[in-house]
Image 1 (spheres, rainbow, N blue to C red):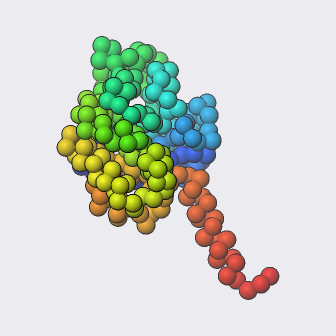
Image 2: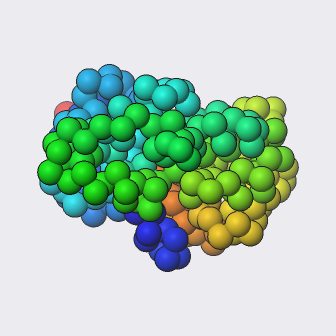
Length: 251
């Protein structure tokens, strides 16, 4: 996924909130490019992560993880289990982002623990994965506050940061305009983040709430676009069925 984004592709996926390998596999079967297992807000525990990573592999989709916090144990465990990238939430400064990205790199450039008996290294059959990690692991920093928007140009220039990913809910809330993603001040923040990413040769990403929002997000310059989650896609599909049922003749 890191190579595809660097080559200029636009990749569309969804968050995985249900903690269900079957839901992840279903999203892959439907044709999504990536799934991000959400360990910050999702309902699944870290113990359910490996099953979801297996499901993504079966479906041929990229698998990422949003960790609860930028902590060595959390990021390292996700990577050792085979996640292709890590998303770090709520990083407001370049110093915080630099420290987080170090968790994705082996020493001396970073702080990731070295082990070769894990899934990421093929249980010891692929020790070369350690040498390939820096070129393979996707580093995603979320921009979710006005301070992070201000710091976006510096964050984007960090080696190992591949994507600046806007969290519209947190960012609009922090700006005092909760949910008003068409407000001029929010649109200005979007433009600044996209420009910061593009100026550093990196990708910008965002989460939108429906497929109908995809063209606008792409037009804004976003190339890693999440469309809701397994749970929201399920609710949207079920709601459409329920609405159609209510239009039938009274039962």
